[in-house]
Image (tube, rainbow over all chains, first blue to last red; front, side, top):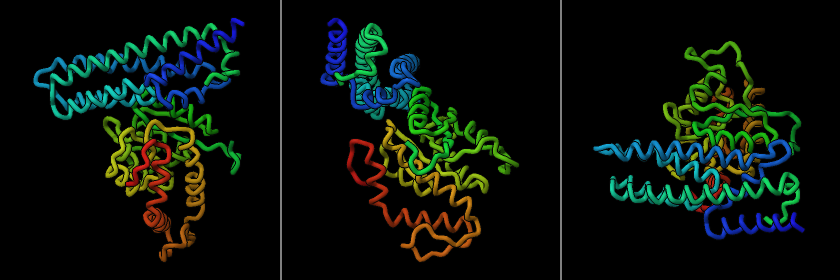
Length: 151
Length: 194
C-alpha cells in the first residue's frame, strides 16, 4: 500500500538521521510535544531553529572579520548557536560548535575560521535532510502522526 | 496529569532565546501549567509587579514559579533570582534556573542564592515533574507567615518568621546534597555528582 510505503520511508529516513549522528534524543523529545493542540510543533521549532541559527551565523561571520578579534563576543555568539543546536537535538552541529568554541577559548583565529566552516557545513547538511523529511511528512499527512509506529 | 491538585499553576518562563522560549512554553503547557514567557529579567520583574521601588501594591499577575535561563544579556538568571529573593513580596516564589552549561560552581551559587532547582538544558518533560512540589511548598510558606512549622525535622532550628523558615529549608537542602545532586543530574546524560 502506498500509504505504508511512505510511512516506512519516513521511519527509515528518521532512523538514518539518528544512526548517522545528525540528530539525538532531544529531537525525539520535541516530537513527543507535538499533539492535536500543536499539530505542527516539530516543524515550527525546526523552522525557528534555522531562522535563528542563520541570524547567529551571520553575526559570527561579521565577528570573524574583525581585527583585532573580540573573542569574548565571539564566544557569546557561539554559545548561543550551540545552545540552539542542542535545543533541537542537532548533534553533529552541536559538536562542531564545541570544537569552534575551543579554538575561540584559545584565541586561535585560524582555528575559529576553519571550524566555523565545518559548523556551516553541518548546518546546511541538516537543513537539507530536515527539509526532505518534512516534505515527505506533508505527503503522508496528519493521520500519520497518530499512527507513528516506525519510531 | 495533575494528580495532586486541580489548580492550574502559573509559571513565568524567562529566556532570551526565542527557540528555547517556544520549547519551554510547550513543555510547561503539556505539563498543565499556565505559562507566560518573557525574553529578559527586567521584563520578568515587570510581570511580577516589581518596579524600581520594590514595593508593589499588587501583583499584576499571580505567578507560582519562575523558571529562568542563566545566561542572558543584561540581567542574568542569577541576578533575577537575587532580586526575587530580596523582595519581601516575591521571596516565597520558587525559582528554577536552567543552563546549557554544566558548571558546578555556577550550580552551587544558584542553589545557595535560593534557587529550588537547577536544570541542565535541554529541559525535558521529566524535569518539569519536579516543579509542582516546589510550587506547593511555596504556597504553604505564604500561608504560614507567623507559624513555627519547620519543613525538615533534621535541623534543630526553630523558626518564628518567614525568613528563618527559608533558612531552615536551605539547611535541609544542604544536608541532603546527594539527593539534590542526583535529582539535578537525572535529566542529563552525565551521572557525575558535584
